[in-house]
Image 1 (spheres, helix red, strand yellow):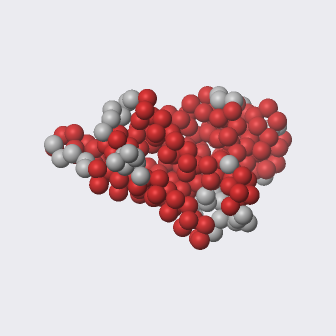
Image 2: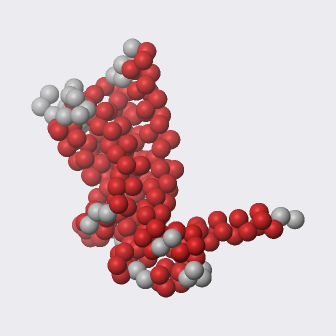
Image 3: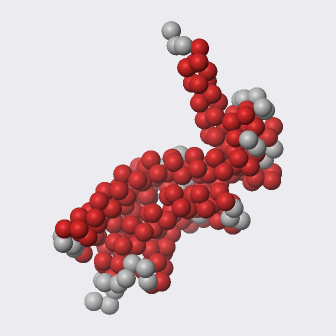
Length: 227
């Protein structure tokens, strides 16, 4: 038998997760101002007092929702990101530089995994939330940017810099990094336009294969322009 206090904690964790999961969709569809506490709690199937109890306010729930999205994205991308970071650490400390071939291979793995994540149905509600924050950034954007986006930009940027023989901090490399990742994220962030232009009705295994092949092609040409 589960002790009473432990059962209460479990119920509390479930209630909190229900609210966070529902809030991704509600905030993404209606925005912060358009989402009422009634809409949020009805979508989660919880009592209205759950918001002030677990998050303090609707504002607190909004920030927690952003952090929840960042955690979910991080669960997918952080293993690969940390693998590359560890390789950079070995290069910096052990004098074992990352070659162009290795950098291209690592970068290919990253863009393939990002493509798979952001064309999945799981990413759809995240995208609605993120697109609103891109247009009208709040503290929620800063939380997502600092915990997920910026670390990924840094890792990808360093790999791009190896291929272009440039400083990772240069504006040129930052632009190329944004352009590369943007070319992958467009399949989610501009989903309707992608589907219309390509004549797709859905993204299944075949379409994902095509998108990942496109991502590999984008990486393959970096640094080869003009050679």
